[in-house]
Image (cartoon, rainbow, N blue to C red; front, side):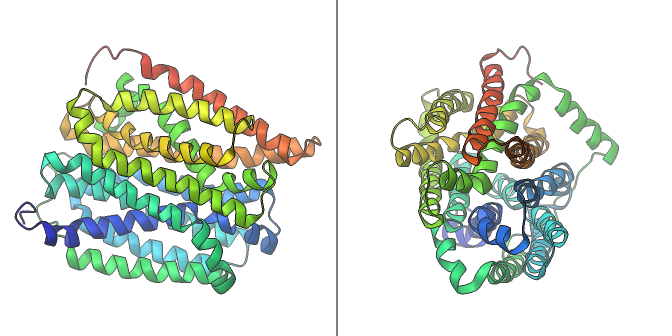
Length: 406
């Protein structure tokens, strides 16, 4: 199918299923931030319990990335995404039915595995079915769809909870996941042409070489603790921070989470609309990271020290988080184009491993600090300061020269 000749059809048949998939993925990623008070009350969870329950999504999502990259190259986005969305539906239903911490943790893990292909399948599909000059804008727009999912998981979700309860919300998501899986199987172009000439052993060897490459390691830290750290805060710890440190009610905190996500949407749309023009003027993905992460460190320090009005700071943090998507492109440019899928999923693995580490690690830190009689406010500030310190260390390699291209 020639998308350039049939743009409306391609938008409905190709872009929309991928965009809805990433919308759903981000909704499921961040929904626990708003339902966390209800989960804690219903199940009697500690901070570390809540951190583990929520972060296991990132663990299974991350574990799936390497086999996902191989599967996308061998079987194509249609079969891979359609099948995994069925698992997301099953995981959401299991979460709605869960009665214990263990049951909910297992269900959350299945959800993470089920939505693990939503972004990567989209990027693979765009590379297959859209011309090169449209790649930047399509990537920006699908990231914006994810931001809409995050927006839905803030104030709209908080308003929906009294009506459906958190179990009803997950039944609704299960139905949407099932419907989207059927749509993917029925609308995306076929995957029959997707084959690989490499043996499995050769493919695994190439993946290992990527992880050991200095070009990859240069960006691995920032992917882990900037991208992963932002996801950990956005999907869980932002709400406790706003309620404890800023003294907001759950409704007020959910509104600020919506502002954060609105900022992320603004940033992603801006890159989608202006990214090509900036590239033509010599602004590289690495430049985006250097500026975006440097400014993000400043904004986070202002949030930590409660310097200045909170609302514009959280909005600006969301805007700057749009730089996270540039990590995939900045890393991929250091490798041959044929390795794009494996490089991008490797970076995605680092990001989601970071989200798991930061989300659960902050929960453990909070429990330890409170055990030693620190208040929740001070414990949150210490944990957040620790994250910022690690991010500073990961920021430095972005200014080091890459001596060789792979």
